[in-house]
Length: 137
Image (cartoon, rainbow, N blue to C red; front, side, top):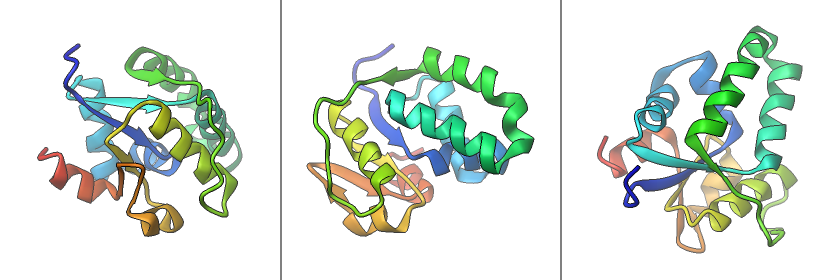
């Protein structure tokens, strides 16, 4: 894998949207699978993903195991050393932590509170549509 790939942390809402509904989030998942970008996540974000799928998107539960395998194969999994308290919604801070620890250029999210930040410590916070335009895909 090329070292110069753009690194990105995907918020849980983007992964679920890509899996369940398609569109721009699915395009981003395909870029990861095709080794065009490098995704970064953390054990906390993976636990949240599984929890949200299990509780809110039962129709996607059939895909938890293959999704976990692909994530472990294609995503860089980091263990953040610093706890952040930047936004009110605690799980959103976990997204920031993973992006900082993984030295990401982007966070892709649909979360309004994170999007309001626009950036944090040189990490741009963008929608799926903005990411695809900025990263020129």
